[in-house]
Image (cartoon, rainbow, N blue to C red; front, side):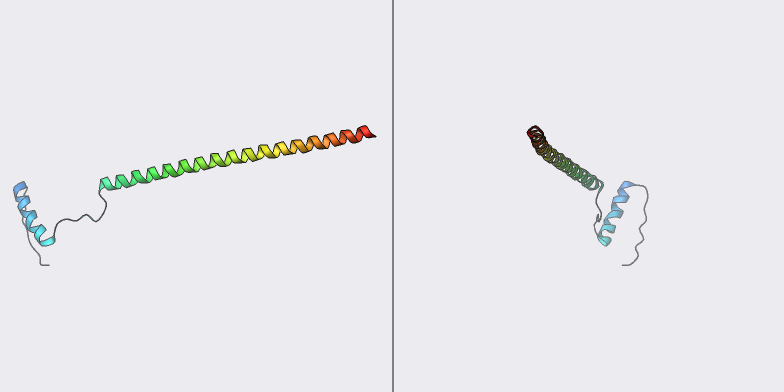
Length: 97
């Protein structure tokens, strides 16, 4: 590509006349990165995804804790039944002597 010298001034009409040959030589402007709206949309989408993941983790933790509490109550009940059985056997053994 050869050098082209383009003289500019502050007049908007001249600016438009200058941009036209530049676009013909270089091509239309391209955006290789994300624009601000796309960046904000991506950040919003990631924040929503993170909130969903956190909510799922909290729900899983609550469900796990409920399961553990139910298991603990069941074990406690079984332990109390065995304890009562042992006490009853001890009482029967002491009475029989």
